[in-house]
Image (cartoon, rainbow, N blue to C red):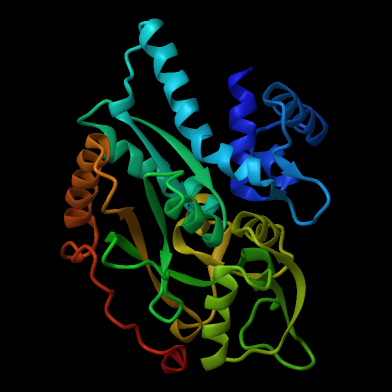
Length: 321
């Protein structure tokens, strides 16, 4: 059995989608499927129920999933120890966060968090449903995500504590060229509707944009939909329309190429929040959580939010108008 077979299985179990799992494992779907079948052949039973869609695990697959993660960690730890590698298990953290946050925020965060200690991390990216599932399934130690009181993350505060790492705005952006042509002016007119680059229905950011537009409607036409901020950001950079992006995503693309448009009524303040399971008492996570709290105290705008408490209520979306 190969280590990557276990890694492949855990990825498809987490995503529930062969195509997405293959992309995250940086391999073709055909090669990915062959490796899953090789693991099934080695085990002697099916892990995936191929008679249904979307992808589901068989009962044996569900039971094997409970052990596969721990088995993989044990094998990797043994390899590192016997190979004399400096990193130990107690220096490793598993983090889940949105793709946009992983690309725009994590590099800066990691430099600050790891400057005084030797750390390594595994990064899992996905939508909010995938991230919460990873946390409650104990597939990650920590989840970091955007949060707004009117679209709360439903996690039991008695079990899951949290800390606020900062805030930023979700607001509309357009390319400098599009604005110069008058194509990105809000709220738009019937004769000149705003070209909209929107999030796919059901995506967390789509619900946040809906909150904004409830209080500040516009006249526009959808030209692109995607569940990824980076896709919409790229289309905005190409001058294809207006996209609601976080400030960090827009900044990562180059400040001179995208410009915020409209006023504050089309913007929404978001919290950047980290969650962890209180029952996860591993020493590396406790140390890292202390690091997060220290970072939050210095960077979250005046202090650390009480862990485990609910955030203060934000103003309703309509009050932004």
